[in-house]
Image (tube, rainbow, N blue to C red; front, top):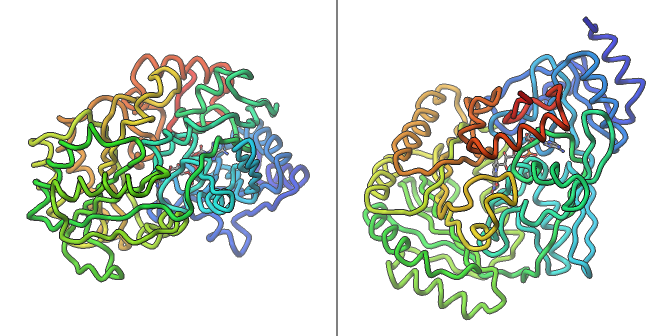
Amino acid sequence: MVTESVITTGLRDTIRGRLITPAEPDYDTARRVWNGMIDRRPSHIVEAANVGDIAPVIEISRSSGRPLAIRGGGHNVAGNGTVDDGIVLDLGRLNGIDVDPEARLVRVGAGARLADVDAATEPFGLAVPIGTVSGTGIAGLTLGGGVGWLTRRYGLTIDNLVSAEVVLATGDRVIASPTEHPDLFWGLRGGGGNFGVVSSFTFRAHPLNPDVFAGTLIYELPRWTEALMSFANLAPDLPDDLTCMITFMVPPPVSELGDRVLMFLGFAWAGTDRIEGEAVVGRIQAACLPDVAVLEPTRWIAFQSALDPMLSKGVRAYWRNASFERVDAPMIDTLVEWCGSQTWFGTAADLHHMGGVYGRVGEDDTAFPTRSAQYWLNIYGYWPAPADDDSMSGWVRGLSDAMAPYAIAGQYINFLGQDAANAGVKAIAAYGPAKLERLTLIKRRYDPENVFRINHNIPPG
Ligand SMILES: Cc1cc2nc3c(=O)[nH]c(=O)nc-3n(C[C@H](O)[C@H](O)[C@H](O)COP(=O)(O)OP(=O)(O)OC[C@H]3O[C@@H](n4cnc5c(N)ncnc54)[C@H](O)[C@@H]3O)c2cc1C
């Protein structure tokens, strides 16, 4: 058995970054991740200073048998950015970004947050398709998939991944791309952090006006059924340029919208012709007039961080997710009954309209499951008080169970909470048997000892 002090000395002697042990005054701050329900106590936290720090940390974890958690932005809802009695490799300082506007390529360090990516690309009138809350880490988001306001126009974040630099369990540094280690490249796009530590990603960026046409149509509870039905009828004909996300929630007190439950039909138009975008959104409004329409000009960066205050670090969180091929009357009844019962800020559900470019990527082109999904439902709790743990997570489970009869196979690992996190128990549900088998072969090749297991794990067999 390798003792604590041997590991501490080994890390101190080999890394350039900072080592934080429980003796340090800021240990409690350093060990915290976004989800306040996760209260783990790592034995060592390494804040990597550069890519060279990654291999020694992997080696010390392997030789000591201590579990290793890789942390990008620390936003993983299941808490996979930390571990009890193990080593956390925090890549937060590796957050450099290089934009090549001519080639429309963006190289992003694995510690960057989504806000960093948007801030770097906006001056060039470019955007990488990423998520909707700016503090989320690019690494975990990308490795799971990456859904956001540009998904129907440009696909998931992984659909725009050109290559990744990866440090393997052996300590070797490799490039994964369509031509180099293509099996690894396939697995990284949806398979999570199972195969190695990604030190940087290179993405394809797309032209996007920094002042986007984006906004929200707001509906009072008695009109939800009509609004959802009319949206479902229009949805198959909506252009790829429009991505919509329908949120059911009681807004936070700061919003001035009162404390009753509302339905927010949010949208972003990725097209160059704003008049055309207004006409398309006008069709949604005409089919079911919203009680309030918020359609002011929006700065892309502001829109990308509009949800931030609601989902700040330290809230207690439990999430679930499911995919659907259609929205129909029985499903709407269930959604309205459950979502309409929310009484106070702390839970919500997002119905993402998928399809478009996302749906035209071949099912076997990436490890990501369910390209046939036309809708995703992300059900999430985010509440401040431990006393509400049971009731809030109970609501999330209840809606998830009630929607299960309408769902199709496949789940988004990035929207799964704690109970789906361990030992590959749910991997079969997320990926299905064929993809899981292919992922398992890749795992066996790149990480046969399962060094990278603090994630939605694919056991090597
Ligand atoms: C408030 C909030 C908003 C969100 N919004 C969206 C959204 O709009 N769209 C969306 O698709 N998802 C969204 N998510 C889900 C998000 O994609 C996942 O929680 C994701 O895991 C976060 O990545 P992270 O780097 O911040 O997490 P971390 O906790 O740091 O890491 C998560 C996992 O990724 C792995 N990992 C991290 N870095 C690396 C690396 N460099 N190499 C290898 N493995 C690594 C680790 O194994 C770990 O298991 C949101 C989550 C939150 C909490």
